[in-house]
Length: 152
Image (cartoon, rainbow, N blue to C red; front, side):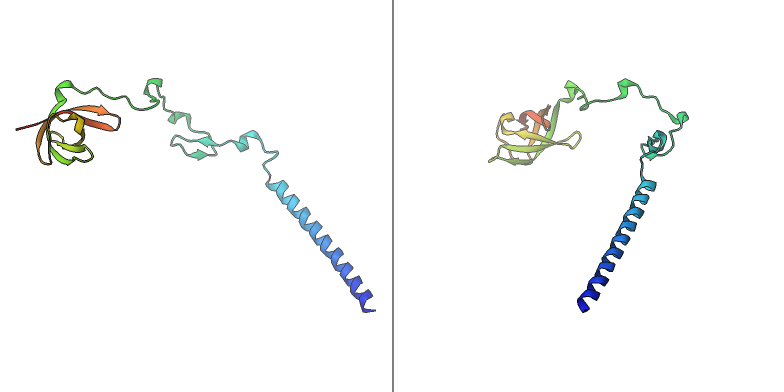
């Protein structure tokens, strides 16, 4: 007799659980319908960009519109300004030079910039703290010293 009673109560529990699951499913369905973006108008889905570049729900103010000419827009890398040939001949001091690797740096006396120098650009052997004259050329990674000569 115990088995029959337990089976009946288990069946009622299962039916009760099914009914609760069905109600929960219906509630979730209704929530999705109320929070869904389907059926919204096109204007409700628009996002605008204001004059500062921030997203906004309202259209930008036409009085704050700024006109930009096509010539002001730069595409790609900046153009290199041609150096004045008179400025190409400079003097400086060797701040670092590695004979084994064949390169070093010169401190330009005019602007204290550090300029790369390769051993192939030397007219004679140099060492650190030597005074030199040189010309500069734009290389792939920046300014390079060329035609480097030691000042006696």
